[in-house]
Image (tube, rainbow, N blue to C red; front, side, top):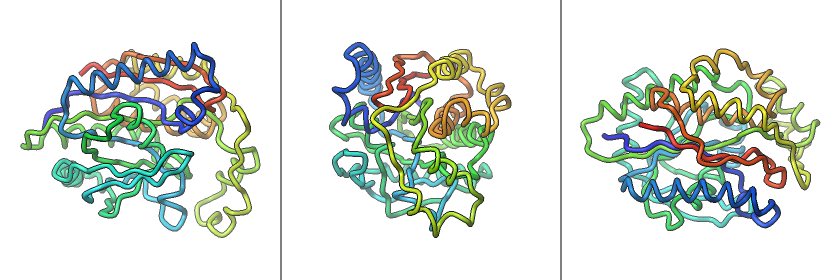
Amino acid sequence: MQLVGAFACSHAGFLITHFDQASAAKRDAVYAGFATMRERIASLAPDALIVVATDHGRVYPLTHQPQFVIGVGPRATGIGDAGLPGCEVAIHQPVAQAVLEGCVDEGVDLAFTEDVSIDHSFVTPLMLATPELSIPIVPIVQNCRMRPMPTLRRSRAVGQAIGRAIRDSPRSERVVVIGTGGLSHWVGDERRRSFMLQPAGTRYAHESEYPLVLPATGPVNDAFDHEFLQNLVRGRTAEFVGEWPNDRLEETAGNGAHEVRNWLLVAGLTDDAPAKVLAYAAVPEWHTGSAVAAFDI
């Protein structure tokens, strides 16, 4: 297979459902970045989009929390969460199977599902980057929600393994990869966030007692966001993953910032190709630092 493009972007459903609540300058800047990504993907004419995103507990609740899972069924069903419409997207099964088998050969034991559901972390970027949902996808979910999560170093290493699986495959498909999530944002009130830090095995019976409550706007740490993006621009993610343990990341940029794992996975997949930031804006009305980036491969 041939990797012909790599991108990363934010995925909050608010980008679509709260479009009008952001200032015109900020929303136009972010949407311009997505438009550039959309145009570049169209020009690359990929056979498949490998999308690396998050699940927010609706597809994988605490009854089963995989660290990495790839969808290999014939289609992915968008569950219609976060105010977005339900949808169906074709999965490129031969590419999905090749990535799964290649990763197992690389020593990365991806979980897999043949009955594939996806939430807004996939659907938001797909709606903005491929509005017709006409390009088959390969959905990969990484646990960015519930501790214990993969370390940042592991996220990057899994990306490197996926990159080798793509390059070593004898298949002829052209693929583009998109990592989604973040940047800085705080999800839920302090009570909910404290509950999420409890040890594995203690949360399942009590999660309903800590409902997710979102205020009208959310804090954003744009200084962290710019620092993180500059690490991508300079191809310095190997250094970044060693400098930001989970507690420091969450304290500085919020529990939602754990989703930078998906950006780091793509950086690893591209062997730390330098990135270009296509857009960034700190948008409290969208509850996140919103960005789009392209990797130079």
